[in-house]
Length: 257
Image (cartoon, rainbow, N blue to C red; front, side):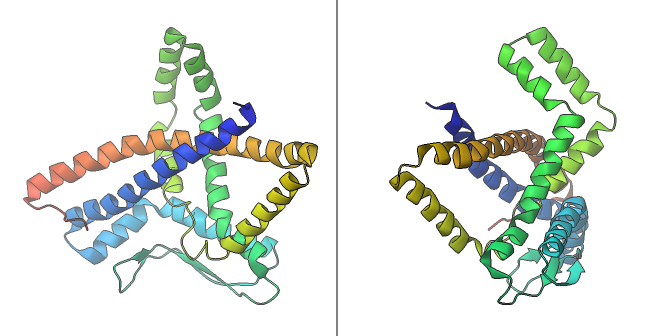
């Protein structure tokens, strides 16, 4: 198989796993907060506080990209709001949509948290945890060096602060349904362009101008997703144990729908 397609396969495999894990995390974080507080309003506040760094980055990325694209913004909030349908909105940025905005700019504004969040994950994983070196050791199978690298990983200065930031950012970076509302026409247009390149057999342009840059981007996404999955697994275990222990102590349990 051509190596150019491997990053796309890794993204296709890791993204659904990440989405399922993050759905579990959001649900059980609210459940854990409810067990701790015994009050739905306070549970939402605790839930929002835990994810606050990620929510702040999410909304700030909307605001900064809208400004860069010349779209006028309005209110900016990172305060949680409880909807009538039981949903929770952790923050929002208002921007004024008119005929000049168009689906491309709106799509970029909606996708901003995803790219900003991925960038933060990659920066922390590279400069704080030296993840590329860890991956090389895993690939070479040098057990002694790998164990030493893992020990260094766990003794990183402020390791739990960095892990928490990764957790908060990664679990607040996915675009909401309102962020994705303008994506379909843009994705369709991109698909049509790629189909036309294939139909007219513009192989060099398709490979060098489209596939290679996309493959590089996909490799970074796969790295960020894989690292996030490992971090989320640690926090899932922690949340599960806390929920179990507190539920046993208080003699109650949360019923999830």
